[in-house]
Image 1: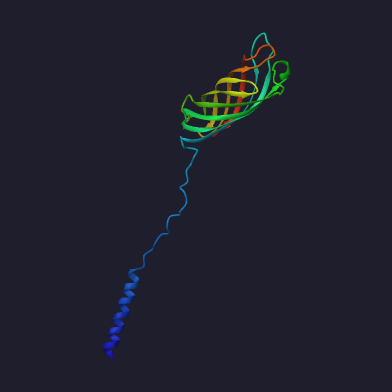
Image 2: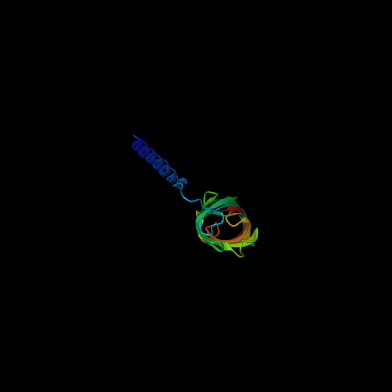
Amino acid sequence: MKKILLTLLCAAMCIVCSAQENTVNRLPDAPKRPVYKDHTVNQTGYWFSAEGFFGTMADPNSKNLQFIGAQFVNGFRLNEFLRGGVGIGLKHYFKSDDLRTSATALGFPLYANLRGNLLSQNDREIVPFWSVEAGTEIRSGYFVSPLVGFKIGEQRSSFTVGVSYTMIQMDTKDKDDDIRNCITLKFGYEF
């Protein structure tokens, strides 16, 4: 009987010792969700711009129109010095019956846009930038519009203000496919 109790006691001690060695603290598995990416510091990726503008035609010795509008650009950012996209907008001409042959005072610009910073925005909150738009305006004609201005803010979140010159083709009461010159002040936001 002593041999059986001694054997059982030794077996119990081995089980207890064995159970204590197998206690390992395990950390939970990593979550199965995408890794967070801070897009405000990302140099490449999606780019969007919304702008409001107003301007006037600047042709001496001829009737001039004033206009107001908004435009939106969706595109891709290669780096802070080059971005490209496609834009759409809405433009309203004031007193357009005096000059344009179109029956409506509205225009719808469809265009390609290239823009970039002239200086790096890494250490600055205000930087000069350039932009070029080229496309067509439904109910008017083709246009080209270079712009220079300033960006205020961060690389991926900035307010913009700029001045552009626009050369636009339109049918006027005096001449079909007349080339007109415009000066425009634009203000907007881009990310």
